[in-house]
Structures are given as C-alpha cells and as structure tokens.
Length: 137
Image 1 (tube, helix red, strand yellow):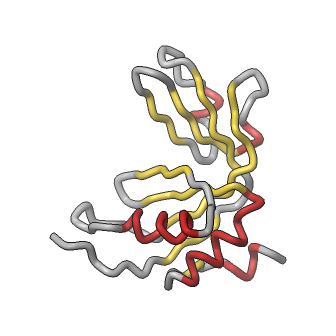
Image 2 (tube, one colour):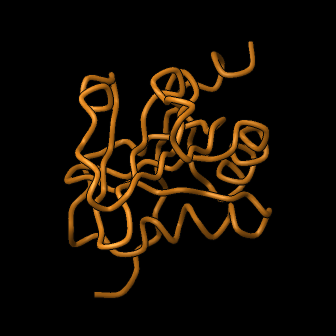
C-alpha cells in the first residue's frame, strides 16, 4: 500500500517528561507504573522508561526536559507514513525526537527548548496542534 498524505492533529501534553535508562534486568519500578503516564520498553541491553519528570529519581541515568505531543487517534495499523509525516519536518529543522508508539496512537517527545520550533515545523507541514492557545500563555 503506498504512503498516504497525512494531515494529523496533535496535542501537547501538560508538563515535562523524563527518559530513563535502567539495566536490562532491572525490575519495573513501582513508582514508574504508578505515574500518570509511563511507557516501558525492555530489550537485551536496557529498560527504558518515560515518566513525568517529577517522578524521575536522580540515581538513574536520565534525560530531563522533554515535552510530549500526542497524535490524535486511534490510528489504523494499515496507515503508512504516519511517523514519517511527523519526523521528516522535525528532522529538516534539526529538532531531536523520541517516539513512543502504542496500540492506538503515537507520541513524540521533543526537548522543551525546541517545542516552539517543533510546533512551527509541524504546522508548516500541514498538521494541526489542537491546544496551541494554552502552550505559550
């Protein structure tokens, strides 16, 4: 199936998020699972967590200061090019991203200091940011 022209609606989630790296054999921390949002991915090399920044403990390897954009879903598994439609305009403007995909949708994390550049790039690419009025007030 060829890629489709995606015009997507995103919303910026409240607050700052942190990306944490734990050892591959580390247990899933209870504090992470009790967060208002968390994502966990275990591989042979690591356990990666995404949690609200306030939940991140200093004793872990952590990258702080990420803002999260949620793609309005649900998205169908047959849709082709969704992430490319978002990642390409951000890459052209030099915005770093961290992506989380779930059954229903995708989440893009961008550094807080690059949020306005990311929003501008996504809008220029034809996407809609639903809650813009609350972002910069």
